[in-house]
Image (cartoon, rainbow, N blue to C red; front, side, top):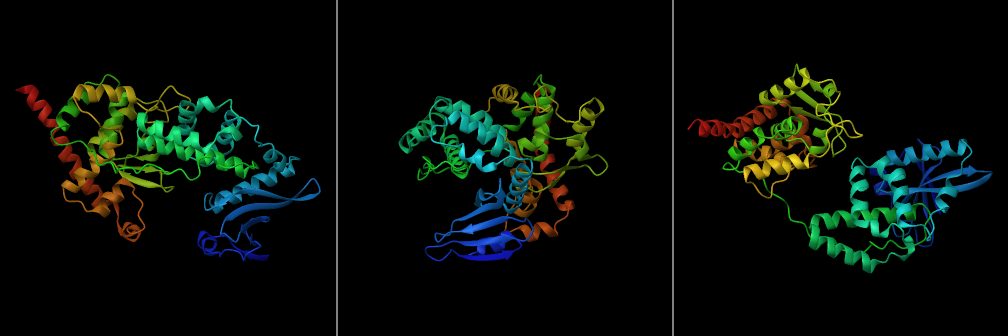
Amino acid sequence: MTSHHLNFTKAALLKAPAAPKGGKDYYNDEKEKGLVLAVTPAGTKSFYLYKRVEGRPERILLGRFPDISIENARKLAASAKGKIAGGKNPQKERRAIRGEMTFGALFTEYLEKYSKVHKRSWAYDEREVPKFLSHWFKRRISTIEKAEVERLHAKIGKENGLYQANRLLERIRSIFNRAIDWGWDGTNPAIGIKKYREKSRDRFLQPDELPRFFAALSAEPNEAARDFFMVSLLTGARKSNLLAMRWKDINFATATWRIPETKNGEAQTVHLSGPAMEILTERKLASESPWVFPGDGRTGHLADPKKAWGRILAGAGIEDLRIHDLRRTLGSYQAATGANGYIIGKSLGHKSHQSTAVYARLNLDPVRDSVNKATEAMLGYASQVSGDAAD
């Protein structure tokens, strides 16, 4: 057994070699006292907090690296220390995860202790797991076997699509991984099951579809949904970011929108074209909410406007188009009007190791020009709607 002291960084921990056969290597974080990375001979790396609890030295498992980041490991260590200082024993909480626990109880633990804490997409877990796995909720987790997970994966793939089946498999694997991290000594029944091969989606609004889309959009009675879809098309922003759009993040002087945190974990500045600014300005004048698209749900903002989307597609006679395809539509028309991949990536907030250096040298001017050209090209088809009406 070898012990090291260093300031934890991702690069340093990734380089940490496997421990010699028959032992473990330990790395002590210089920034968070008691935080340790243990490395096994197989190369598995796990974060622990070493701390005296109720007079006894305890080793509290925090999670595997790099499944959880160094920052989150430090937060978990600090949180555990706070519980200990308050008289609680985190180890007792972990030891409560046993084979007799029901899947429903485990999912509740997972949602509150992990998903809502570490995942921006926790709402999908809250919705999708009960939708597809409620028949497991009263069963002991130790009775759920690999064979039935495989059958379920195949069934969902056939009935709901390959993408849905793969996402559900990922959720099952993650839930059982957390149970193991929290002290369960069982085997993850989702390990070893291969995901379906997914095809990259390339759907976007074609030139002949745009006039029909704009006509159906203008006829949509839900004003908030109508404006949401139009701004989505004009900005190429991800649906989750646009739903949570706040007035305080919009700079009307520079015509920009700063998204504090995207899917990539980074902030993004989005150029707002003239048509997008017209919609937002009109909404701002009539708004009394901090949200650009307010809603009646617990989040305070608009929820997923699926019904309105269905009405628009039906009215336009368009099939197989998703809300996310509006994002791809902007990028496609940017490409059609001469933008290169770096400019498109910059405007859509794509993250690529190969283009990071190029992004750093770009300012918003070429991005603004590209978005304006693409907007002009798309809205040119809207004029066909009024022209056809006049004829």
